[in-house]
Image 1 (cartoon, protein in one colour):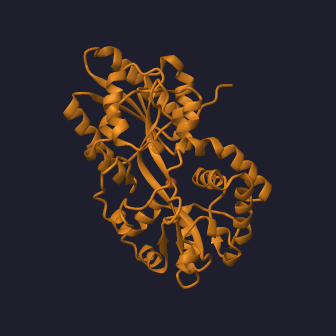
Image 2 (cartoon, rainbow, N blue to C red):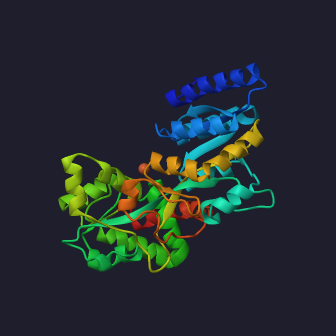
Image 3 (cartoon, protein in one colour):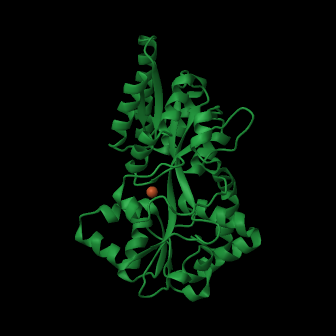
Length: 351
Ligand code: FE
């Protein structure tokens, strides 16, 4: 019995078109991009790349899982040159499955901090982060003091009993954050910390990050975790309800006095079987340019990843721009810890 999903079928179709296009016009310079990003603002960025380089971008849009399944199914015949994915854990997992190839680029080495990239080997680096999202704390200032929630560690303090809300512990956003906390605290203290979070919960984890923000505003929770771009969306919203939510809550970038606020990335890598390797590297380097960085970060209200690049996004500026202290544990390490963290979550009963 042949099974497929609609996203897989859609990619199969476009991939067939891509390979047809690849053979039909051999002289044309192209780069084939498999992307898990679907933002209207990205169009202008891609057009600028083609204008400045003469390299046409053929794009396949799908979700992360669909892209990875497709790459595996296509194997060496894959037309993919560059893969764009969201979340370091997904990039690291694809890397571990041999779907990427290491590249050498002085431009990328100079532009992007090493903790936002795969570990460097003599052959080069596989994936690179091109925008960051911070995992921040939101709290109700009427019920919780700022200095009781200025670190991830304090979320496990019995002072916050009955106040904490999060989405499922197994969601990649939480798995990544918990992995860094456990990397810093060690396994024993890390698991105790997770137990403390469970003991402080106002309710059984449910919903997404925006639901946690709204639950703090409604009084159901006193403190919660969210990715920064969900806050930026609420800040930008014209809806009265969203404005009311933002008036009720405060944002905390945790661990500013210690290890820094946890960030994750949207990033890219060159495909293992890329047929247009030079163009793929050129495209990766373009993504690190100040011009592309602004587009790339704005597409999802994220922070630029390249050093010294600031955002033109007013909602990000309202949250403090990109000038907060970032955690610098290598994101590849975090990805590696996730299995262990999931086992801890099961032991402490964190749904
Ligand atoms: Fe999200």
